Length: 77
Image (tube, rainbow, N blue to C red; front, side, top):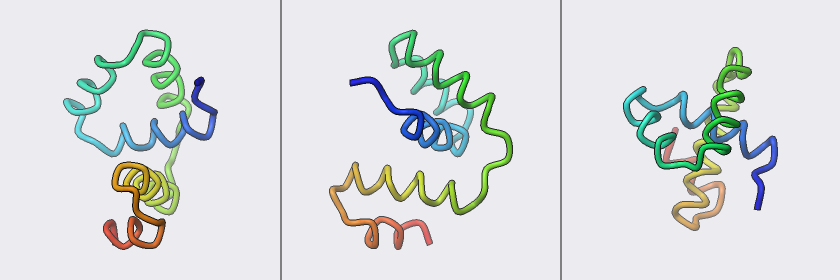
């Protein structure tokens, strides 16, 4: 399944929220077309509102942990 633009943006926000080393390692694990799309999205991000960063992290945690949004968002507060 191809990631949606919204999913690419959230993934890009997560990557720029990490250390350069960690983000680089993750990009190295992806197939070339996906890594390229993410790199383009990262360059297009501009300023990231804290609310958008929090939302991307909470969504990631919800997917990872299988928790509801309220539980995931409480982790990052």
